[in-house]
Image 1 (cartoon, rainbow, N blue to C red):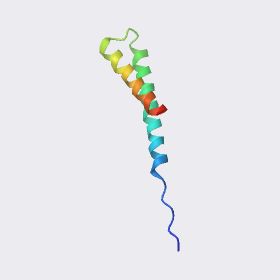
Image 2: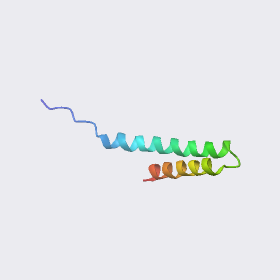
Image 3: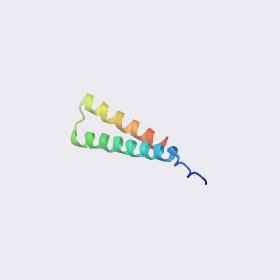
Image 4: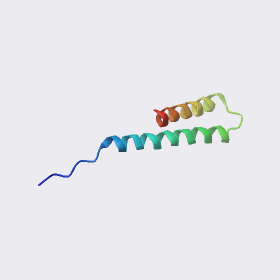
Length: 59
């Protein structure tokens, strides 16, 4: 009797990276839109979120 094949974890890992990355990008854009004159700290946080999210989605 054959054992069922295990589901690959690689597919779930890349899917979670895509979800986390897109949430970071959306959160960063939301911060920039809510604070139209982006204050120094929040503007940097938003840009950092967008950059990290794009790296996760693309990479």
